[in-house]
Image (cartoon, rainbow, N blue to C red; front, side, top):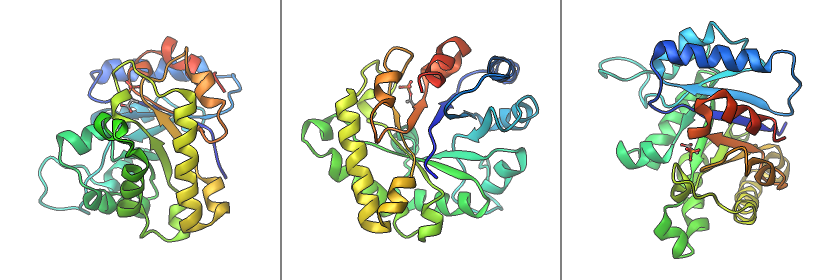
Length: 251
Ligand code: PEP
């Protein structure tokens, strides 16, 4: 079933105590409220278990920001999908443009990460999106199609049905520039059409496709009102309850 989701990506922000405080405040703000989307907070690895202890896992759900492309063993500094699952995390962001750009994550590496996340019952929030030069050259459709094909299209229909996609134009992330609602709708509809061609219209209709890139309280309502935009992956505005909550409430 297609869901509306608003997911926060804390990135490398907040020490442990600050993270626990933010999670507590968000949980308290949402207690007793009816919202029309699932709310997820994706935190640094070290926060996961402690944050999980202060949220209910329903009103506020937990996600990680990355996982290893290996099962276990001598991979110093890495954190496996199984480890994430053991903290109570339900989601994991994979393929964020910062991971692709700064840590050399290729479509092939991401394919392994997706597989391991699914094997450990984590829901991947799989990020795709073009850089500015690609958008200016009109290549955005081609770029997202290749990212999806090379990392996801070996999945069975059943497994693909568990994936959440996040379209994040790289030129809009952390820049204050947002895709216009029309630009977002156009490419989200295109992405859904690729999914339909591969897995059938029913699977495509059931896939949540989030928008990410400088989404905030001021633009969320208009972005989310598009038929193919099923929520947001939120960076900067997820770091305070007063900026995140209005986005959750934009549905
Ligand atoms: C992100 O990093 O996923 C993101 C969308 O960041 P921001 O909202 O800060 O642009």
